Length: 202
Picture 1: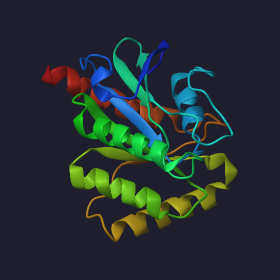
Picture 2 (picture 1 turned 60 degrees about the horizontal axis):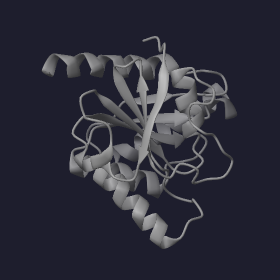
Picture 3 (picture 1 turned 180 degrees about the vertical axis):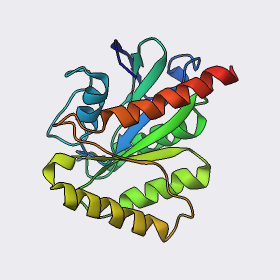
Picture 4 (picture 1 turned 120 degrees about the vertical axis):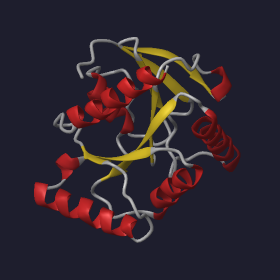
């Protein structure tokens, strides 16, 4: 898939106010500071589409971007270590929960994981909740440029073993580096395949 055009559409705190659900949609989410904005910019080829920041918690709304007028990319708030109040955190959690559970054209949620770290409870719990709700998801490992190739492979295998303790079938996994523009094509190819299925069912 070649991305020709990527445009910001709108930001909302209520899934019911999001764009009409007439196109396939893909959500990107992960712990705060996992490199989500950089990954989104790499996938779309637009350096400043999503706002990057060293400060966790920059994304605070459901942000819609339309790609080539054929599908939506959705940037969701991170979870984990953002320095916000409990009231604000609870509000984010409800917003994310409602979007993930009730957004009818959401095809797949891409959960971002920093490949440098071992499997963390907050990520595993989030993915377990998705699985229990029957929400399709896949894993994108980020920041692969921070490790040597052999270390990356070992980290991914260790992650698979950890998930294998709970999951009978593992989700698709992708290794990426926004810094080196790696892993872009496999992710976009997966989205393209999903898009074709979406069109056929309409």
